[in-house]
Amino acid sequence: MPELSPEAPDVAAPTFAVLTFAVSGPGNCVEVGGVPYVYADAGSGGFVLRAGCPHRGGPLHLAVPDSTGRQLVCPWHERGTSLSRLRKEIPAVRQGALVTAVIPAPPGSPVVHRRLPLSRELKPGCRQHS
Image 1 (cartoon, rainbow, N blue to C red):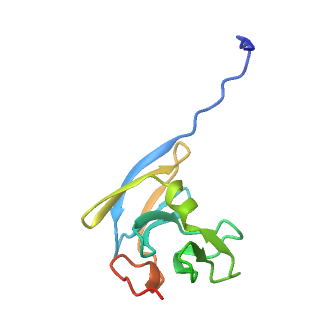
Image 2: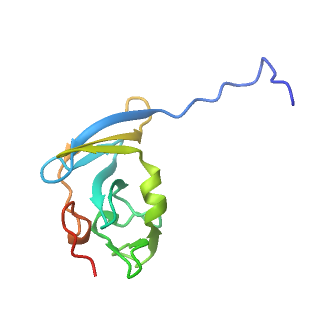
Image 3: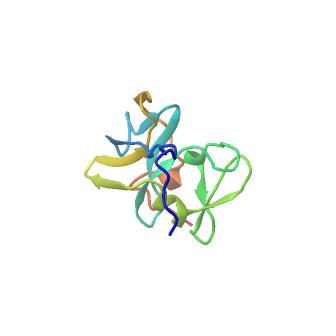
């Protein structure tokens, strides 16, 4: 195993914020450093979702599950994003009407709570998936 040099530069550990916000309605979105996150339910359990599509930044909070229920389809480009991967990105726990999530947040990142609409298929409690 190679030895570490005492002159090796320190590598900054990633920083995170533990934030609690509403599952639905006013305050259902927490924006950290300009990146919005929402609680969504695609019919197989809820999760915290980064609201921007990883492909080109489209409104993933307005996406719908594909016919297999394995991907969310971005309304801008119709590109599918794996629900399995999305569920693993942001650790979160829901308790009643609130969810607490561990979100990447550089030091000093501004945090804003606001409302962000969701597609009908992603709203908590709406299980009308085709």
